[in-house]
Length: 292
Image (tube, rainbow, N blue to C red; front, side, top):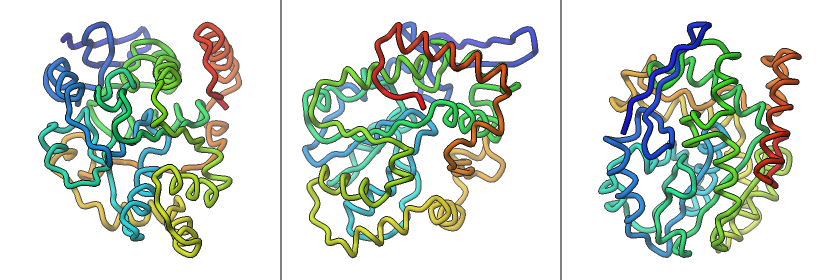
């Protein structure tokens, strides 16, 4: 493993862990290699559900929806246990049915899940909204990978040096699209936002859960962005895990959650440049997932 630190001509600072040619968040445990090995060999259970999402695409929204459906309650469950940041023994000790998460590329997920054990759920988001959300999150956290301007971040985000997806978003998505097991459900952030109830029903069906319409409607109401943000601020207490990189020990999970928020950040030149890069990458990699 190598610690990489880059300072560009505009004094933007970017740093990450590099292992086997892939970029990783500096918070990934240890030397990366050992953590990936533990994840790969992790013993999975048929009832396991993994929320595998590129950062800032709707991880907590999806996780809390799944947890409400799986527990039959309307409780806010906060942040999922993420495989790359936790000792795998913590996951091993979780009671069945387990729901946990990952931001890793799909190639790094547990081998048994690749063979069909358990279920995997992902959600994709408009790429411009996503990159704006990521940038603001990084600005609100210290020493986790980037310090600098939005323009500087854009230039790193589209490269394979992007630690958020162990490479670019495009590579992350390509990995997801090549997942051959039928145990994967892929949702759209924008469709979830515009057709929440229908997606709640879709999730319940995929999870093989039999809930009546009244309960599903209550889930719909309780996973609104404002409701989740309110509950996050009330329920999530400060954590020693995050106190060194956040202002109050709480992860800055919820910002605005709006569709089209990118228009308030991108300038015309950035938007045109980004569109051009996306078009090239999508065609080069034959990506089917919609960027916007």
